[in-house]
Image 1 (cartoon, rainbow over the protein chains, first blue to last red):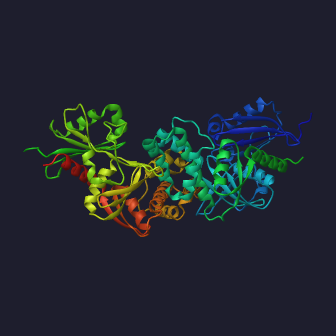
Image 2 (image 1 turned 120 degrees about the vertical axis):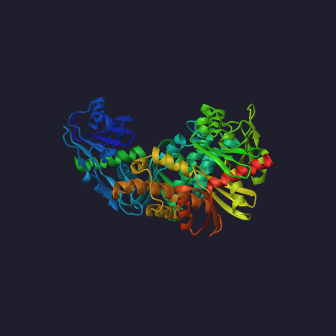
Image 3 (image 1 turned 45 degrees about the vertical axis):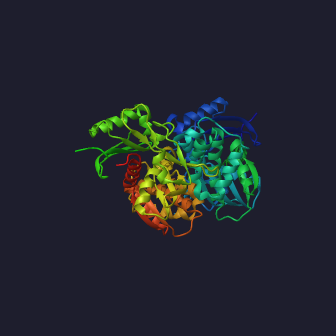
Length: 306
Length: 306
């Protein structure tokens, strides 16, 4: 078996590391997942983390590696800069940085930056996911929602990112549920059902009255004190309020009844789909893993043509 | 000198303790301030904390004590329940709870509760501040803003609280500036100037587009990365975004150009005054300390008539 045309594709986020070994025909030959994201790797060493995963799948010494995400941040492995919006996704591969002083061909893809003074914004990793998602959904004008710690909403026109907005939804959920008075209300439940009425109700209230979001948040605590709201419902309310606020903000100024492409997976994908559909939006779902692998593969084929 | 008619007035919050010795004529004879709020006192003992401060001002053994705030919460010293809205402020004193098994007359005032399923809400301490503020501002219909960790906005009609809304502004500021990616943007400044253009600009953007609040929050970080925004400006942006969001929410559904009574003090009072006036509101300022002392005194005179 020859391994020419094989490569490793890595999505290296702030708190997660995912690696796939991709064959010449695009098939996934092996997969590794760990919590050794940038925060961990900045301490233990990016090279050490990558090598340990490559060794675990018995990767050959010359196997090239393509990386997207926070490994390209200033505080990452090798700064990969930003492409500025409006940006063609096809330009990403050409701006990859080569990691110096390693005995293997390792490239890190750049992020995207929106430099306007009014709404400056950045992404790292999602641009590669977008590159893969754009190929899956076909051309045309699209509003793309990429939920997560820092959710991204992207205005895509074919291959071009016209602009984007980051909402701190996931990180706010963590900070509120751990470090505020709401921790008392949610502590006794680790999760809630995606079909929860409390979630749907909170989405509805936050989208109807987004300005009152921090009042809706406090009512989670007051509801526990006055009505004995259970922890799972409280957690669902917190999540629904923040996701509803995000959707209201993302759609502010957009035409009604738009189609949305949701790049998601798992429970979070289900929650966003529920919330978006409750607002009358047509939702096309693209699997988040498939999208990022597709984007990494497209960039790899551009850098190392067969 | 006789001390009949004297009493100690205590505002006992979650994280702060304030005590005044009040003479028969209402004059403040002594004052104590400490960080031994409910959180601390629940560990070291409420009686111990109170006694140490009374001893420090050489209070006589029979001096009665009136208390408002979190000392009356379920997890406080002696649960003092809630009066339900719509609520007459004059009813507060009549619902005070007597602390049992102590060798001194100690009364804890109840809080207010709004039990509706849609927007349940609670306050403890602010009802007493309102009682004092209402006497200072005269009668009539008033919108009262009481900024803080959990800001309260109250619809007051004479002596009656028609309803109120809590906004988690102060606690969100703390959680965001300490426990999220925004901590990198604000860490190097402990404060910012109240007249800061960055604050005014953030208030303006958040009130214009409250739905996009969590995007405005992320832009604080992006502005640091892309434009080198300094830490003091970043902190001002964070504060202005959250205060602007609160004001937009509090005024949602209210008629335009309303008068607002601001019960505030210090830097926070100045920030709210700036933000409220920037929205074209007429602001009447009542000193927060004076208001809570006034409310405690009114309740004391009702409980222990001269």
